[in-house]
Amino acid sequence: MVTKPALILLFAISFAFFILAPAFLGIPFPGYELMHWADVLDILTPLVLIPIYWLLLTDSGRIPRSLSVVLAFLGLGALWTEGQGMHLSANSISNLLGGGSTDVHDLVHFYDEVLSHYIWHVAIVGLSILLLAVRANSQSGGAPMRWSHILPSAILYGFTYFAAINEGGTVPFGLPAAILIPLALVLTRRADLRSKNLVAFFFLGYILAVLLFAGWFAYWGGFPEFSETGII
Image 1 (cartoon, rainbow, N blue to C red):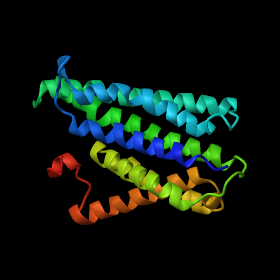
Image 2: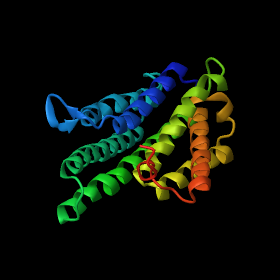
Image 3: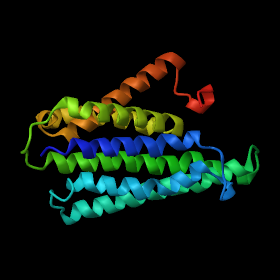
């Protein structure tokens, strides 16, 4: 079944905006200056993205949902929201604390830069795998899939995924996942790459992310975060 390209594009744009924009909004929020505009935007992140994930999962209601699929989505959605919410609060507190080496700084850093990122990014990958599994098991039909319709969306997703994983310090998990997902699709679902554009979207997105990781490693000799190189 061919997912509406407009829905995939909406997801890619929303994913990129809510993941990337907070890095450039570290200015005080006028309504409560202990917060930044980034914090305010981050409050909306799961409220926007989780419903869009659901629309992709059900193809706007056209695909029936089994109990196991619904439970898997609820679990991953909860994990996604928990990781993102933990990052939001810990990052906001870290900005207020500033530099330091106390136990409080260490704990906030752990929640902000380690635990929350891994929880969040595991859920991002998990939801993409769930979407692929559901779509791969759905019947083909409708208008033929056109690569040109999903290429811009895939580029946007691939870059955002690379940026989130690299800046989040979760490369030990995120890079292998980005390699294994398209490899598994080629080995087991090659026909779906030509008939189901949501499958093609994630395939191209993760391929691009792998290429970006490779280029980043070749240039820097490792995976320094953008903030460590002075880019942001």
